[in-house]
Image (cartoon, rainbow, N blue to C red; front, side, top):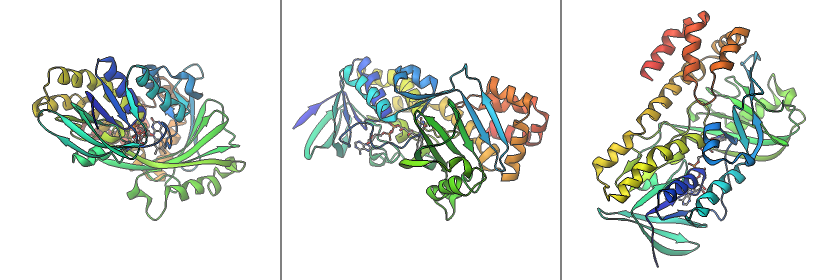
Amino acid sequence: MEFHYDVAIVGAGPVGGYLALKLRESGHSVLLIEEHEEVGRPFQCAGLVNPGAMEKVSLEETALSVIWGARIHGPSGIPVEIGDPRRVRTWSVCRKKFDERVVMGSIDAGADIWLSSYPVEAEISTDSASLRVNREGEIVVVNCKVICGCDGAHSWVRRRFKFGRPKEMMVGFQVEVTGYPGVDGVLDMYTGNDIAPGFFAWAIPSGSTTRIGMWSRPDLLGESSCESLLSKLMSDSIWSERFSQCRIVGKFGGPVPSGMLKKTIRPRVALFGDAAGSCKPTTGGGIGPGFEQVDLLVPEISQAIISDNHSEENMIRISKMLDPMRRKHSKAKALRDVFVTESTDEELDEIFSIWSKKEVIEIINETGEIDNPIPLGIRLLKEVPEFRRVASKAAKALIWG
Ligand SMILES: Cc1cc2nc3c(=O)[nH]c(=O)nc-3n(C[C@H](O)[C@H](O)[C@H](O)COP(=O)(O)OP(=O)(O)OC[C@H]3O[C@@H](n4cnc5c(N)ncnc54)[C@H](O)[C@@H]3O)c2cc1C
C-alpha cells in the first residue's frame, strides 16, 4: 500500500505537533507517525512551558500552576527568593494534555496521524523521499517530499541519516509527590555537588502535586545515579525535613539533549526539537526552543517544497538560519559552566551570598529571565562589584562561548 504526502513527520510529541500545524497552515499535506498508541504518554518532563512558547499555542487551559517566583538554594542552604506575583515567569502544565492539544491542533488543521506506527526504512533520491512504515503491524510505503524527524532524544531519523549527535546529553529523573510544603506559584531549586553535580534539583508546583527532580551529566555522576541523588536530597540533605511528608505518586526519567547539531537539515530530511539537540543548556527546557526552530524554518522549508529546490546548497543556507539560536545557546552554556557546572560548592555558596543581597535580588527581578540568562549575567558583571572576581572568566565565556 502506498500513501503520498508533502511531509512525513516522525514523532507526534509537542514539536512534531506544532510543526505539523505550521506546515498545514502553509498549505502542505502532512502525515504524523507516532510509535505509541496515544499521544503524550509516556512523557519525561517537569512540565514548564515558557510564556513565549505558550503564546504560540494558546493552551493556558492545560496549566496546573502559574509560576511567578523561585526560591533558589546554595549548597549550604543560603536561600535567594526572587519573583513578583504580578508577572508570570512560566507555566507548569499537564504534559499529557499539552501534547494532546498541540497535536489535535494540527489534526484540526488537516494533518493525518498514524498511531502505533514507526518507520523501518527510509530512502532519499533527488526527486523524492520515502519511508517504509510499520503501521499497526502492517508494512506500508509513504512517499513524500520531505521527512522530518521530531522523534526525540534518541531520534531514529537522526541515526538513519547520520546527522551526528548533540554536543551534550544530560539525564534527568523526577518524582511526582503529594505533601510537599511549597509556596503556591513558586518553584524551589536546590544546588550542591552531592545532590545534582554541575546542575540543580527542583520542586515545581503542579496543581495538587509537586514535581521533584534533578538533572546532571553522566560524566559528573560518578558512581551515583540520578535516582539515588534525588533520594539523597529527599531523605538525607539539609532540606530533607521539607520532604518528610511526601508520598510518591509517579516517577519519570530521561535524556535532555542540548548543543544543537551543526547541521539539522540535508536534502529532503530535517530534524527538530530534541532530535536536533535543541534543549536549553541552562534549564533543559526543550519545548520553547523546539517551537522557535519550527517558526524559523517552516517558511523556508515550505518554499523549498513549492519551488522544488532541495539542493544541498539551499539546505545549508536554511540550516544557517539557526546560527543565532546556536550562538545564544552556546553563550548560555558558557555562563552556566562558569556559574554552576564548573563551580565548587564553596564557589557556589559565595555566588549565592552575593545573590542574596537586596540590591542584587532587585537586579535579578528586573532583568532575570528563566529562558535567557545572558542579559542578567552581563548586568550582574557590570553592576555588582563582587562579581568582578569571576568577571574575566565569565566575560571570556560570553565572548568565546
Ligand atoms: C526530567 C526531564 C524534565 C524536563 N522538563 C522540561 C520542562 O520543564 N520544560 C521543557 O520545555 N522541557 C523539559 N524537558 C525536555 C522536554 O521533555 C523535551 O525537550 C520535549 O519533550 C521535546 O519535545 P519533542 O517533541 O522534540 O520530543 P518528544 O517529546 O520526545 O516527542 C517525541 C515523540 O516521537 C515519538 N517517537 C520516538 N521515536 C519514534 C519512532 N521511531 N517512530 C515514531 N515515533 C517515535 C515519541 O513516542 C514521542 O511521542 C525535560 C526533560 C526531562 C528528561
